[in-house]
Amino acid sequence: MILYIIIIAIFLYWGGSWLYYRYQGKKLNGSIPQTEFEETMRKAQIVDLREKNNFDSKHILGARNLPYSQLKYVEGELRPDLPVYLYDERKNICVRAALKLKKWGFTDVKWLDDRFSDWTGKTKKTTKL
Image (cartoon, rainbow, N blue to C red; front, side, top):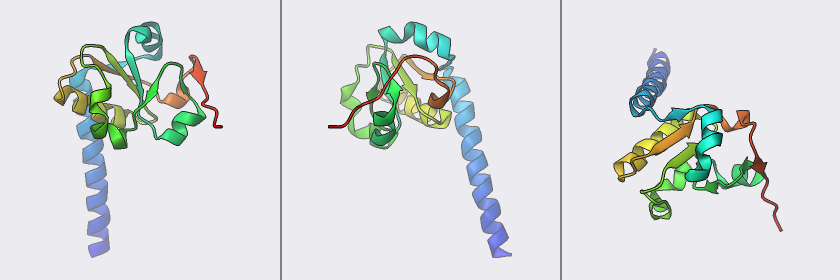
């Protein structure tokens, strides 16, 4: 019986978290389609929120790697006066990062509507020495 309660609690937490960030994402209105992302990204700071090993294997050309897990330590590496474009494999992570950036005073934060694995634009692979 207790196991069932724990499993239900986990699913309620997971579902509630998903709904919360989905709502926050709609409220921020920062999701942009790939075509708009690609057309306007030259004027923005492009941030790959994935971990370094994923970034090194393939990333959007011109992006910098600031993993979500390290975002609070690299706050000063972004300029708040320029647009910030985020991407990851999960939209939820982008919304969470956007909420943090907004809290820190960034006013123009957008994120890729699709997952990075669906990206069809120019990419780069980082070669290791």
